[in-house]
Image: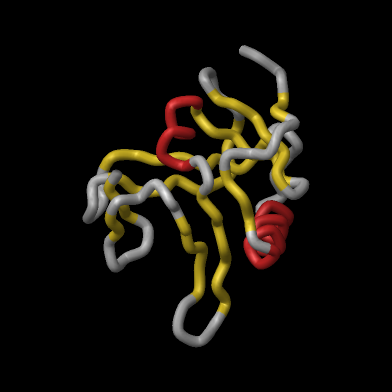
Length: 117
């Protein structure tokens, strides 16, 4: 398993709100330094693919990035679907949670977590 960390800009970006919420969640879960944020996709959902976002340990095939001070793990194959995506956190009266602004999505579902390419 490679231990190289990408220093170039990562495939995804976070808003300030997302960074604050992610750091708060990691602190609340009392996760060690071997955990990073897994960003990825999996089959399913209304439109064919859903986003994966959660803390996990590094696995074979993962690339590691440091984005806004957050260690991010992403499987190499998922970059094709996620490059250029912005992750935000909404904390308003109408919506609360992470949102995904993915320029690669040909269509999205009303749930906001499912997309097609």
